[in-house]
Image (cartoon, rainbow, N blue to C red; front, side, top):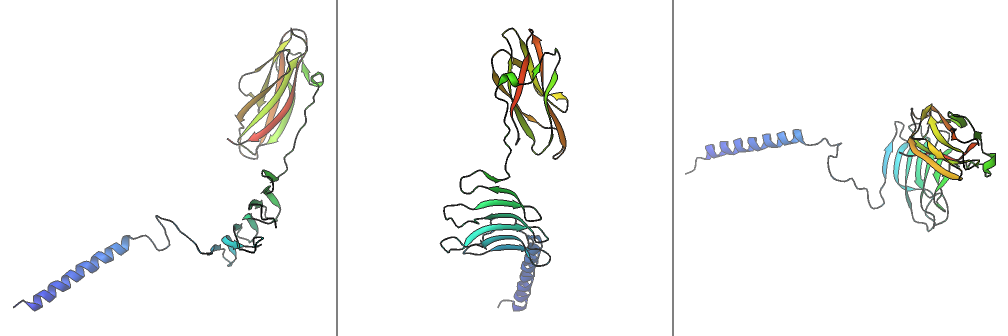
Length: 244
């Protein structure tokens, strides 16, 4: 006959071991508010929403207004500041079904800081300035100095990490040569560009712009004569800040 009391005691001990193992595993599993691997999927028309302290949506991904032109729900993204003002939108605000959803970034007053042109591509806002250069080279600033002197100068507010400057240059006669260069806060960028009798264009850069974003930076275009008796001329044709 089996020893029933002993078997029962062993069964209890085995159950205790299993309970301790389960208890130990429960202490090392991820917290219920963390996802350490895998995806979070909100499907079948669901919405992902994060509310601020007052219960208003701060991040909203899902059905938004207006509806698509065919009446189906529009799926987009809305992000708000914690005070409830709109910050970022990915949505179609037009009634043209051919238009894709556009990206809009707004300031705290609701003004548009950035928007893409959903009809034709490119930027809708901000408008970018276009500068015109003098077309006749005889009207370009001229130098006869043996050392570099300023022909053009500008103080910019740094908004992008790099920039380029395109320069048109020439001399008045075949025997006159010279050089042009760009300086940033008084330091020359790269090597001087040779200037001869031909009308040519040279792009200096892209080169890094020093300082913090929104700091003031001084850009100068300088020229000098290295030979001859004529003028060395130059004109800024284009300049722009660009990404790294």
